[in-house]
Amino acid sequence: LPDVDVVICLGTHKAVRYDATTGHVQLANQFISKASATQRGGRTGRTRPGKVYRLYSSKLFEEMNDHDLPEVVRKPLEDVILNLRAMLEESSDFTGVVPILESLLERPKTENIRASFDQLYKYSMITSPNDGGELTPVGRMAGNLPVDLHLSRLIALGIALGVGAETVAIAAALTIPKT
Image 1 (tube, one colour):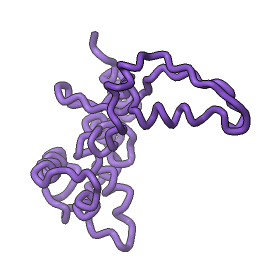
Image 2: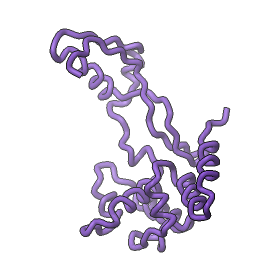
Image 3: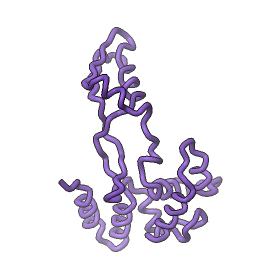
């Protein structure tokens, strides 16, 4: 936006976060990184002088991470594998998910990859617990849904059984945070 004169930065954003205690992915309010704060400040003053108002202390800024965590770290690895497989399985040069994961700058541990394949196989999302397994129909449908593994499996099974609307409502209810 070239005409932005003033940016008011609260120092927070909504980000995908995996809660290991509940096993669910949620969209939560979190502090931004220093790089994001700098980037937000760069949105003003491009075509004329501008001002940034940061509504947080310099001490909080110093405590912020230098950079945001990559999404592959913020999401359960099972979700990443299932989504990659669903997106790329029709590609003629697709050789599996493991080579892609191993080429990442912050690659997941081999034992975590293996455990994720075991989990996907246990939930009947793939036909074998390794990179050679194919997606099952439920796995293919779940891999194309933008929700976490448990909810996408619930919705996919509900659709397969003819009760899609009911399972979507149940999945929505399950995402409500407990207070």
